[in-house]
Image 1 (cartoon, rainbow, N blue to C red):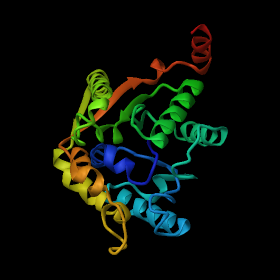
Image 2: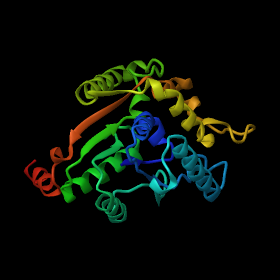
Image 3: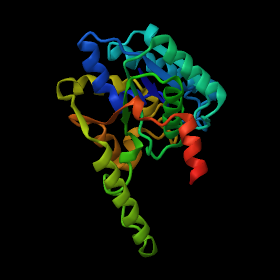
Length: 253
């Protein structure tokens, strides 16, 4: 079961894994957490944009061999996802209904609020339900920072802060990303699926300031996500602290 904060995260972060599993005959379920209404809301009405991106997700899933019946659309507001009872209830219901053996979620330090919120929601639900599954965290926006992408020399007064941030990023990558999945033989299919997200990959309004993924870091960000290997942080769900133990930890500290 793949939890995707936004339409396209499932393809960017683990499209190769999805393709490999489908080619091997495995069942894959994709859960889209948000409604896709805000990525270009200043240029397109929210309801039209949401419908556009939902249709794109259907096409991308089909390109990866995932049928519509294996997709769930929870519809929480994009960029405003909260760790609340409604989101937890929806996630818990899906986990209990489908009982996945493996769960894929965004990386806990993915430098994006919706991504980190999805991670927290799913981890809390898994701990509370005490489901025994393998958890795989996939990074996306984590790569959009130095030293993975050169974003220009910081101002002199920011050099120390930038160096500390870079060291922390490298240490996290070294400690967490111990699993690399070779997707070389399906990379062209992943790229084909990603092209289904026209609103993210093409300028739908050529005369406007319609930003695409290729515009992020002058294309370097997208390049890092279209490599021969997909990287994951893997651990058993039993390693997650239960909600009670986390509360006790907070009290003690």
